[in-house]
Length: 339
Image 1 (cartoon, rainbow, N blue to C red):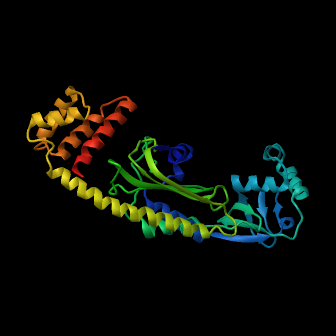
Image 2: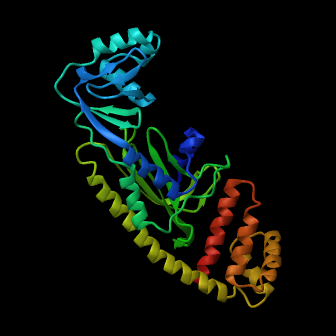
Image 3: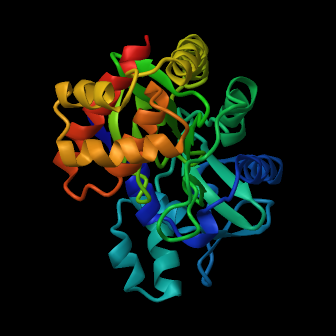
């Protein structure tokens, strides 16, 4: 089983204004950005960096450069941004005038409001964040963000100046895989400005901690696509991956529900002595067994579900991760008795 840290890294690199509390809020942000954005085309020699470091196009208004588009402009000119930052605005403007390439091949500029968000050559093909989120909206209505992270604000849904990232799970999709309980989830990412690839990673997991680390993941599937001419073909691949995840979720959820139904009815033993015998056969220490019986009695009997529920509660107090993982495996084995 794998430990997935992609959402964990996103959590600690995002500013508060890049975090969104719900999928609807993220969707609205990306839709608004799409409406407010335009692609402008210009030859490199028609770009003018004014003395106040704004970018002017021929017969067009002036635009502010973002951190990303400024870096792109420096790379096109073949000048280190650290060098440009040490120059006066007037000298920097002259440096760009003399070093930007002179060619008839047009540049593609993405503008949103008064900002130029990116500058690319003609071979770059943009995929809008909203196009990707439309797939999620169409096929994964049961999916939602995980619990709020330890910082008290981050939900796993992010969109900033350079890219978008979404972490979604199906909290009702628990299913049994080889005797253990897993739920489905996925990471989804894209950049409208070429900062990162288009991509998705789907998986089945057992736990997500408050640092948004995904623990004990299986059936991990990853797909990425660069923003070249065929980037939209990637939408078809992502659609197929999401459809497969949802279809498998439906099949497995039905099986898991039937397992839980049996677990709620089927008793682990006729009396306390029988339950003690069955639990000790599973390798549980007698001290823990006694606590399990006490909690199970409060739940109304010694059904498999009541015993598993009691063990799950007690496992939360186990401090060492290795001991907790071993106990979780034994809990899964007991639950599988209902199959």
